[in-house]
Image 1 (cartoon, one colour):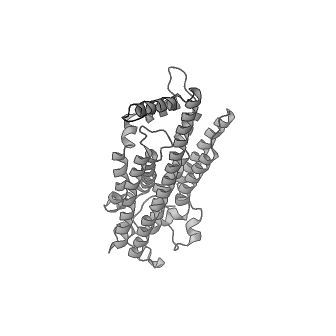
Image 2 (cartoon, helix red, strand yellow; image 1 turned 180 degrees about the horizontal axis):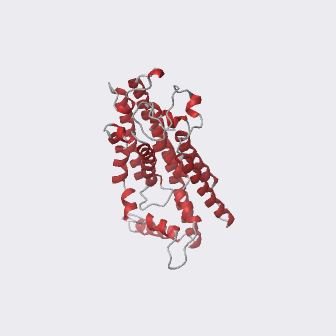
Image 3 (tube, helix red, strand yellow; image 1 turned 120 degrees about the vertical axis):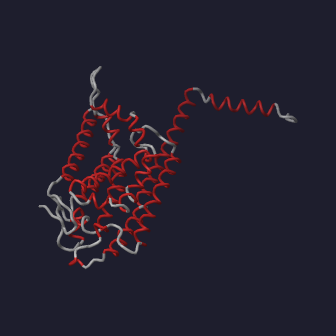
Length: 326
């Protein structure tokens, strides 16, 4: 049913009337137009169809990837299809939980599911001279547009602007004034996180594949901005976002205190994705070294360790040419 909640929001929005409790926050409560449940269900269905297609032709797909994708989709549903979705339009602290999950936790879990790799393996190749979904996806991955939006010169400013440019300008109040603006903002949070973490995690194909050390550097450059943003919210002496300046009177919640809680959530949440991504990068790095060592061992077996023999001969020549050597 339509609602405004006293915040000037228009459109088919459900706004809570009772103060928040854990049970009310976690209860299943999608919005009147169930866009988010439909998108989440479609994401799970398409992924499952692709996995089944691989298994039917005898091509295994890691169960961990499927679990990660499922967890990522469920994390999106948890903050958009439950009471959190409604209370996020009334309290800044709940909104910040929604923002942090959509922009920092859900993208990491979804990317761990390697959806692009799965699509490239599951989609059939088109007949010669024709262009199908797989060919379009490959073309997109190699396009100039994708090179631009995956560059740190684009992803890092976008990641920062989604905080400071949104909350410290009138843009947030304008977006939250209508149902389309609210839906755009939720999609923006998720898309920003996906673009930022995609080249850093390096699981799916991307136009560029920097070294592991460079990816860690990109990660550590971006994360402090969340901490600084949270600290700025906690230290503010007045509400910074007009939309949340007047919580429902009957709930007895201070707007400034709630903003401080939201700032603490933003500050603390920056640690979670950092640890997850860092762990994933370290595992990739170790596996990459193991594969390189295995390739070297196989090459040594094929050529009877010719590289080592040549190196030993080189050392012997150096020793033989050293003055005073026997």
